[in-house]
Every structure is written in C-alpha cells, then in structure tokens.
Image (tube, rainbow, N blue to C red):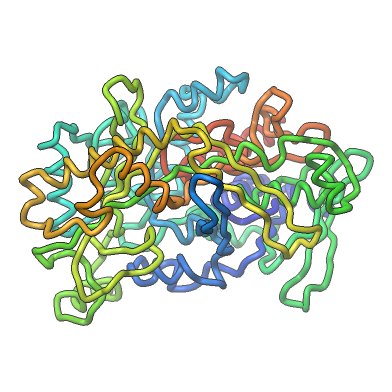
Length: 532
C-alpha cells in the first residue's frame, strides 16, 4: 500500500515523485512504462545522440497523428519520451515559458490561482538559473537553465540579421519582455550533460526509502471503486507482461502526458460515454472533455544551403570530427544544442502579443530534426511556428487494448487564423535571411524555393509541409466549463482521489516550448496536494 501512486515518470512525474516523497511519512510509487534514463544516449548531448532519440523505439513512443481535409491524408510524427524524464529526455532542451498573458488567460477562464503572478514562484522554485537569481528567475532549484557556450557562425549571423530586419534582441526571453530574439537558454549542466526531469529531480533522491520507482510498467487502468481512485493495474514488461496491482491510500496522480493521460482515463472508464461504449469499456463516469481540446504549434521550415560550409554536417571531415570529439573530452565541456537561436515575433503589427516563434538550427535537416538530408552539404533551417492556434484536435481510442496506439487527430488549420499568420511568418523569415548578415551564408533557398512567391503559393506550401514542433497540450483541460476534465486543483471531475498533472491540463497552449510550463504545473500541483 502506497500513499501516492504517480503514473508516468516524465517532465511532471519526476518532480512530483521528489516533492511528495520529501516527507518520509509518505510512501510514494512512480510508475514508468519505459526503461531507466541511465544511458549515454540521453545524458550526452551529442547531436547524433539527439537524432537517435528522436527515432528510437526504446526511448520514444513514436506516435503518429493523422491529417484532415486541408493537410491531406499524410501522417505527422509526434515523438514523446518513453523513459524516466519523459519527453525532457529526448527534446532539444530549450527553456521558454511563454507570455504573461498566457497564464492570465487561464485565470480569466475561471482557473483561479493560475494567473502569471501566481505561477511565477513555481517557475522559480524548480529553476537553477546560471545567470543568478532575479525577480523572474530562481537559482536554488534542481533544474539547470544555462547559456550555451558554443554557436556555429550561421547562428550568430542569424541574430544579427534579425536586428537588421528590425527585430529587437532580447537577452532574457523568459523575463520582463517576451518579444525579440537571442540564443536560447537550455537545460544542461556546466559539463554539457542533459538536465532533464529525471536528472534534475529524481536522481538526487533515489536513496529515499519511501520512494519506489518501477520502470517497464505499462498501465492497464486506474482502479476505481465507488467513485474513488484507490489503485493501479499494470503489466510488468520485465516479467512477460504479468498483470500486477498496487493500491493508493491517498491519491492516484496521472502524469502520463498529453496522449497517454486521456487514453488511460478512457481505459479506466472515464471519458465520453459514446466513445467508451464503442469499445465496450464499462462506464465509470461520463466526462465528455477527455481527449478533446488537443493543441499543437504548427510549424514549417525554410531550408537553405550554406555557401560558407561552416554549418554542421555529418560527413567525417576533420573540422566535424573535432566538433564531435568535444562531447567526449573530459576537459572540454561543450554546452550546446543544434536549435540554439530564435525568439518571438509578431506576424502583424496589429497583433498585441507575439504569435510566432522562430527557431534557427545550423544543420541541413529534412523533417524537423528527424534525419539529416544529404549530409555532404552544409545548410541550415529556420522554423516558423504559430504559438496560439485556434484549431483543436482530439485523441480517441483504437480499441480497449492498453498496448494499442491511440487515434490522434491533429486538425492543423481547421481554423484559418494560424494559417494566415504563418503565411506572414514565412515572409518575415525570408526577410531575415535576406539581410546583409546572412549574405556570407545563404547560397540557395531549397525550401520552399524561389518558385513559391504569392500568398496562395506560400499557403499551399504550408499546408503541404506543416509538421508538429512537438509542443502538444490540452487533451485533459483544466477549467470550470462542461468540457473541463480537471478543476483548478487538477482533480478529475466526478472521481475522488484522482488528479491529472501534466501538459494535458493546459486550457490553452502557452506561447513557448512545453517543458518549462509542465514542470511549473507539477510544482504547483505538488504544493496543492501537500497543502490539501
């Protein structure tokens, strides 16, 4: 018997395990479907390791979403971490929080206590800011937020080109001002090791006798009796999928992420009655919002050849070999991520809060970091990503089998709002790449290419090439309306002793990479539980 069972050892789950087990009187169990994070593939930030993790079957759920009438029948790759640390163990480690208005909007929707002033202390609590503490940042937390110490020449030129295009430089994208560009701060140690949620919050407390961590535990369902969540049934993948049951005295906390959290709720009988009936799952509680409100930041890339040949390529020439060797030399601590520069800009002067994120990577990539394209040629990509889409997707079940992948409907551009903004974003990106600072680097725009010029041509390019930028949220939204899944204390409506604490609870997606807000949600959620 445990006091708390946490399902999912990802960005949120690792922090929750830390905070809830601080009191030695609390018996805490953390369940993770994937393996341990104890591997050089995760901890060493070599770009080739990151490429491996993006495609790994061992450490990655490798989900796929389906298109709609606008984007066609093609599938969209949605990687999610399947290991201790979750998606923070496989991501590009960029630390951004979003704009103040993102959180104030949550509060305006009825989520009392989630305005920016209320959540800022929780951002600060988990953070170890290497620039030292100030009003916006803490330096006593377990999660490193650090400036990279290496940039390829094209990245430096990109920052200069943005300023030449009239975009301000912003030395703190998570501070007083949101608009502007800079080199991103990232989650790494001074020695250049990945600082994901497992290394930040879980590894330092592994010796606690009241904390039990079970990996390779694929959850079947949450056990609910008389409307009370009091246990979890899971398959032990290390013992031929043997079904095991554990009990919770106080709470079950679902932190399985934007895809698996709604799936597990539905497998447990909590969700839209019609969806559960379709798969002959006994209804425990009709909650129509489960799996709805799914949001993602749609993203396209502009790709160019680099005539300076100074960008990262994967062929074994001396300069490249020297670069990669730096990741293995004990006396060379390289703090680096490929997508190292970018920021937030307005698609239009009438937009009150910047609605586009730019992300620049000095490597010629094909599909959003999944693989290099013709590695003998140097090049770079510039991402244009819409931050606050109005379109909403959904997650539904394929079957009642816990091992079946869900049906993910991304529904990109169901609303033209973000599509129209991204057309302007492509023009902004081209303007940046045409500035004097980029002239030594831009040899040729490969994508979308010089034949794509009119708004209609750019529109079609976006529809054909849009991808996920892996910032997914919202499928178990927090709120006080009929489609809300959890209340402002993250308690699941209609079920006692059950909360959802992860990125799925976002009512509206933040204008940021998603890891930092998820850690904040876990920090605040832990505080709510402990002060209940």
